[in-house]
Length: 105
Image (spheres, rainbow, N blue to C red):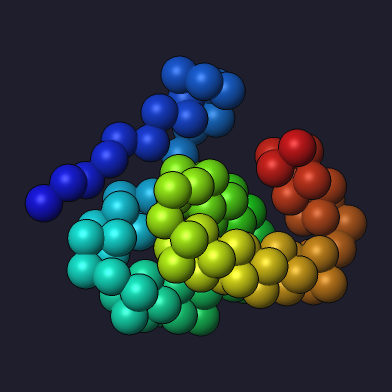
């Protein structure tokens, strides 16, 4: 099983706070239904935590670009990113929304 390492710290200085990237990397090995299930559990459990929601949006965006050569995964990750990003933009307020925009920028 291939589990990719999320090298975001080396690239940007952002220190991951969750296992989302690893969770989705594991799901990638099991296909679309596993990715959808991982998203459903992650989003439902953590959408009210602005820090974790922010990281979920970042991971979905990262995975989308990671799968540029796999249209099925690329389109799925884009759809899931849209759901999480829209939720964040519509529900985070004040300092939480500022954190979201600064971190994802």
